[in-house]
Length: 162
Image (cartoon, rainbow, N blue to C red; front, top):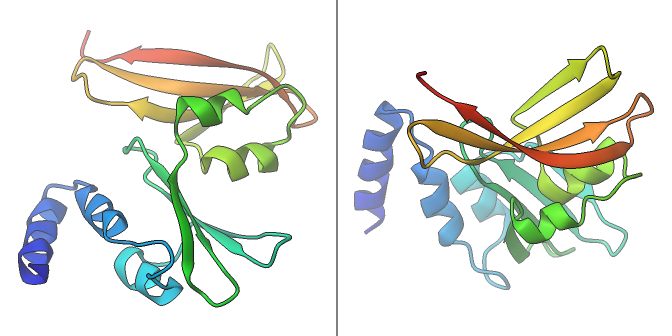
């Protein structure tokens, strides 16, 4: 089975698809898998967060082209405790005015893109959340003021191929 998956991932890589990460993540088992397995399957995390309870959370974002971001939490013994896909409506609802950019990243991972709007003096972080329609991409947006604090959130649909 592992050889078939490796072959499939190789073929998918030729087409630039991120499906291999999905296979690797689905095989991780909280309470059983280790940080060594995570790194072997997914490589180094995009960022590593140290938590107050002694655990560590690794970010695996599939942005800018994918629509997932996984936060994998490991305990002090390097055993996976949780594997969470965080680009969800429940996580978006946790983003409230006043949070800073680091707090937002800890909730939903690295954005697909960042844009500065000079007229409004705002920075907007965008996460791709739906690319299933060949005619449009849907982004979740978080707007930050000059101090780097959340002002509001929104959605944006980018039409493709006029």
